[in-house]
Length: 389
Image (tube, rainbow, N blue to C red; front, side, top):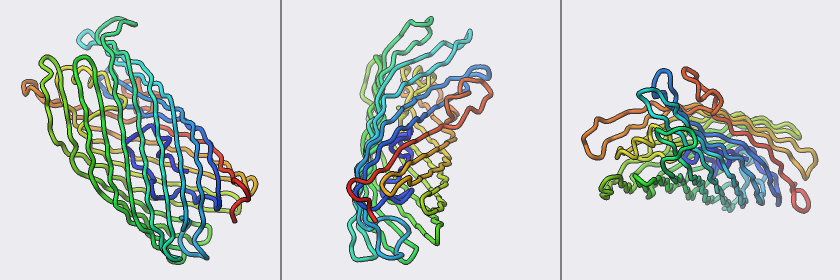
């Protein structure tokens, strides 16, 4: 299943060439529904919280074919496979920072879309080896009306922003009895866009890295360890009032993740518990933008974001018949982010925002840690034609 395509976090690591629960053999389809959130909060004052969130509700469709490795070779990854999956959502995006005598109100509301898809192919090269290729794209775009310093229902400006991550990977997997290892090269293209009447940010480019996975199976147990790292630099273009002069730079970026999973399979039921640590450095902010950041961007400040999150995920699949299986998944995430704001004019001092990555429930309460960021998934797999053996 995997939750990468139904996660609200565009830049978090996925499972492009990895496997959570081993897919059914033969030709099959997938349909599912998901609810997810991504929320960011900053304590602008001890008694005032600046919070922002996006909440997509995904519809998932997929089609694929798999043929398992012969005998007891490997640990569940098919020797031959092709799979196409898409996840689409229309999220609602909100942000609010309530006013104080010396702190202006900033509030925003709007809608957007998520357009995510993944393509995966494995081709056997003898009994023990497979060559693997994959493509994944996650994209979020939103448009909001923003209130800065006005009464309720008075809007100061409109803004649009987008976040995108494209991954292309090619690798090799080797199998022994009950064990397999995978190594692959990865090219990743993270991008961000943010625009109002006062500011324009556009970040593009791509860089290379790699990934590796080890999976072991003994009896009903499966254990996996997976890591990835990509690092390089991106082309950054910024403009802001009053002159809208071009500011073009090359700035560092990196995406890293480490994931450990433990699963057990009965005759008709499979469970998988996994934990992941995800770290990102990006020279932009274009997801769940805070009101404090909105005012800073309009004033000519340039951002640099460093985030790290921890995720816990539980997945279950139960086969009601040889042809139909139900899937349920829950993922919870907690994290922190440091956003450094530098004045492009070199006049005002640099600012550092300690941003918490938390769920929307309790996110607006000062002194509250907030709930975890949840991703909930319910779906079904079904065989097309005779169920695979």
